Image (tube, rainbow, N blue to C red; front, side):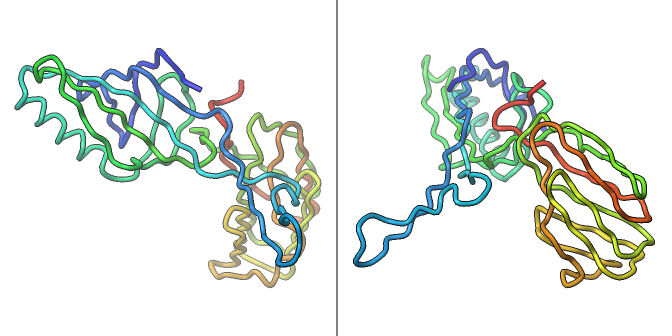
Length: 247
């Protein structure tokens, strides 16, 4: 689906207008392609499909294709500008689209790009394809603090989102995020549970053995965080969206 009329984009902390680039069109898929995991079984018709066997679907990386145009006084200046654009786009960085405020992607240029001089070498058109993860990310980190032996109701207007849960100076932590329960045994000075990396850190050391239950995921919509422990917990997460932020 194209987002025509976009004013431009920012990459590597530089807006395309710094190079005199006008983004004529931005082509971004609203929904990324689902990972279709299948297994062929010998001496059996068809195949076994793993897609959707868990409680959610998993998605492939996506692409954003931007048609750009820019001008120069002559062919030499045009070539110099193309060279500077190549340096600008040469490394992975954060990508922002003007027409989709409050979100960004961790992106990299896919397949390079080619330029075609027009108007006797005083202008050029290039198509830049960025490879991006399946989701855009909110600019702000959501932080929820839940006091000891209490609960907090909240709302996520994005897609399913991993989180980081932290606590200090406690023991035998137990909590629920939505329908997911988990616990940590033993005392700790600092504790961090990362459901994106599936890691547990106690006092700065890896400590997966003290963890039981499931790693929590922030669901879409209304949810409740229940803290059954004697110390406060802090839940941090970055909202994820299929497209732009849902208001």
